[in-house]
Amino acid sequence: MSDDVARTTVVPWETVTDAKGRRAWTAGQIRAALAGLPDDAPVVLHVATDVDDVADDQIIVAAGHGQIGWGDGYGLERDPLFAFECAWHTKDVLHIRPERPRMRDGGTGEA
Image 1 (cartoon, rainbow, N blue to C red):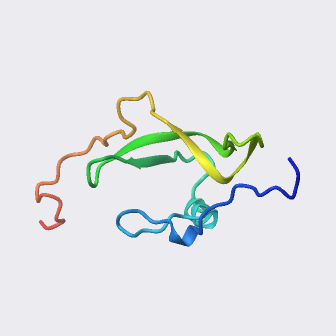
Image 2 (cartoon, rainbow, N blue to C red):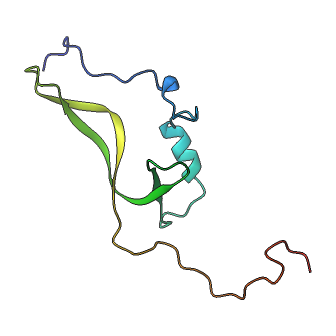
């Protein structure tokens, strides 16, 4: 593809929000959030569902830039968006409940 051909670009990222007005994160924000984690720490994505305040846990299985083909004869081009590819995990649950006695005060910390 010739260098003078217009390529796919990204909308102004500061304008991308969810229904609650929270802005989409950048690579720098993700890096900062992961900075203190050990290299072998598990990471999941809580993927929004159609039900308010309910999310599904998905695992990250790949990441990178995909390809976009607009069907206009120019073929595939590199997607400017870096994406995490997610999948459903095969475990029943991802958390292991600790074996500990139930608190008698209902969790308030009061005796």
